[in-house]
Image (tube, rainbow, N blue to C red):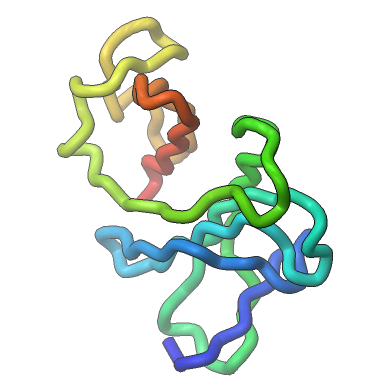
Length: 129
């Protein structure tokens, strides 16, 4: 990935990226708390990017808008970090509010699930990585 890459999304021209992580397949995930082209609006998203894409401008491959899942805060007080955690690290250790049982990744082939981490926030895990 080139130094100084500008990321955009279909709904945000200038995400204010705060956190970054890399998954087991090498894709980059960015946490953004607002859109710099509209700084007064809270906009908490996780963006997926391809580190092998060429050029100095890149549109996110995927995005997850968590704004409505998180408490309402001012535009520059949102998501600050993101972390990729493998299924093997969380299987059987988190409570899955969709099944009312401990988390089993086989229940979510190729999709995203919301898991109650008991940490007072939202946790969205993408199991297709």
